Length: 376
Image (cartoon, rainbow, N blue to C red; front, side, top):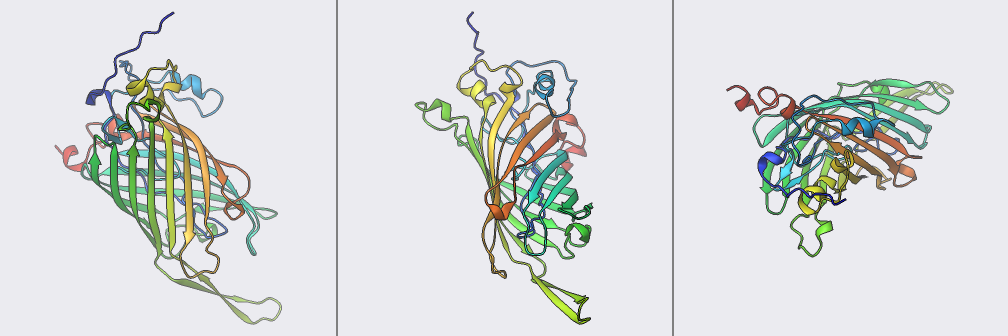
């Protein structure tokens, strides 16, 4: 039986439409206190066949996920788009564009190694983030995270981390070269979280550069490399306070002991290497992948952090996160493993998952539009 190949389409109605990213979450590390964590989003061009059904069903992530996703409607629009390239939402690194979206929930579970007086622990977090376009190129985001820290041999500690705000401006787009560039500022608002889970009493500001590059402009001699794309971030976390001094009473001598904790500037790097099966299906060759696989994007994220000053231990910590994203018209689902790159970064393999809603598709005439347009 010969499979009929649908003609390739690149018209705007077949693709998605732009959206904004979230401010990357951080998970508390016993080594340096911060490590970019979850948060982000997006979706991808769907199958060429338009589905008139607008209802959507989503089963819990697990053994029935593939069956549930195959029943979801296919999108005829696109978000995070540069030319024919759709950049999917990633969990560990932020996206190079702005949009109207909601990440809820993002769930992460990792295990950290012992450091100094701090025992090894299991850290589990549930977070959410809301992103809104003010103009087509400028967006803001608001994120919150609930953490549960379970040290070995000790009672668990739980509470909310500091509130995080994000501001992003997309200043460059090259449709032919599938390129996006943005600049932004992350603001962790001090004293808005619980000290029990390590929330600081001071604010931290992180100016960040974002980029996205698709390889659809490669020569026709290497067609199967065209679905490749890379996104990334480069930023420096700037603490609002250089150090914190804590006064305690020695139980043996009764004397007062002061402890000084230094707060370094921290270089933050993130990359996501992805291979888009929807791009392969729509713009290279229909290889006959059935749903839900035809709308999946396998990827590997790399998240790194390195203190730049004020501390003696300036070794790099980070994780390598292989996973997959499925993107539909109204929702995106992402699932990744969290693999520490060295002993300082953690112990064992963790996991993170995210459910992401595209508000610009769900509410195209309301909250899903830039503010000036939504008031018309």
